[in-house]
Length: 342
Ligand code: F6P
Image (cartoon, rainbow, N blue to C red; front, side, top):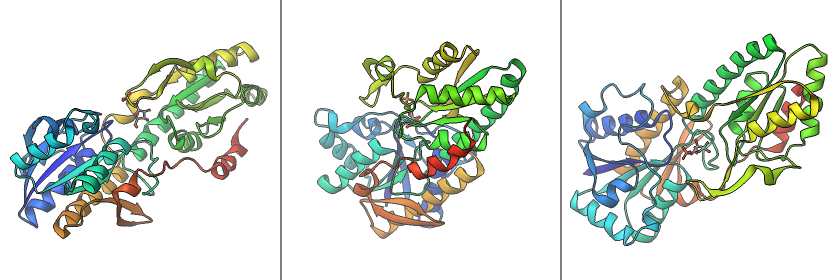
């Protein structure tokens, strides 16, 4: 059995742990051969491969990024994309493919499996934790830890200057990183894409915090939108997902807070820092377990499936289910943390 492995979409702490789990179990227990495809679907599309064996995965467990490289190439949008992929898989004598990725990568995997009979097993990844078929995705815990540490640090500088500090975290469609890091970091307001925010309400929270002689921290997800200023945030261009690009809700909000409260405000945009560097212990644990179960799917010939976490169990779900629904923050959960605002 020869197995291909690829990582697609945005990079995410824990990708290397999955690759290591897949390859080590596959070689040591099942005697399989592996080939790595470079840069997500671009690899099988162009026949761009890399050696993938036990020495290649040695020492990669704590490393961020992905040794295979990643891209957002979508073969379904390329001329003869499917045929080129099938030809290159045949040329490499690949019997099965492990595709590690988010919504877009797994969406392609689902179609290749369901419509074109390619033997694919999917492994979910995203720091956003917004895939509905799994309780958690690896990368999320690391991103939350990084954001929480940043918020802790920003508290002390905010207090020293008695300023408002607005922290913009990732999360275009779902506010999980904002919610978890904001709660863990003791933010005074958490703004998420799932609910439009009222700038006057945010200013009221900020003011009440100053009255209690504390400097406020506002955590805002990059996809959060104000009730009364959304047009200001759209510059009309499209991002790599084909979505309308948002231009800096954090910057915009800090300016509005200054204007409406007269208090000095600054913004910190955490950006790709949240995706870089070594994965947390939890993410290594989850990613490794995903890898071990993915290669078991290959052994069982159980294709068209994605591994997922349910409680503490790793289960298999149809790939088509993996991308069917975005997992957004439950507003009841959001209201629960609202007690700390202000
Ligand atoms: O999906 C992961 C993610 O990091 C999102 O949180 C963020 O909106 C997006 O990717 C950024 O994408 P890019 O790295 O292409 O700018």
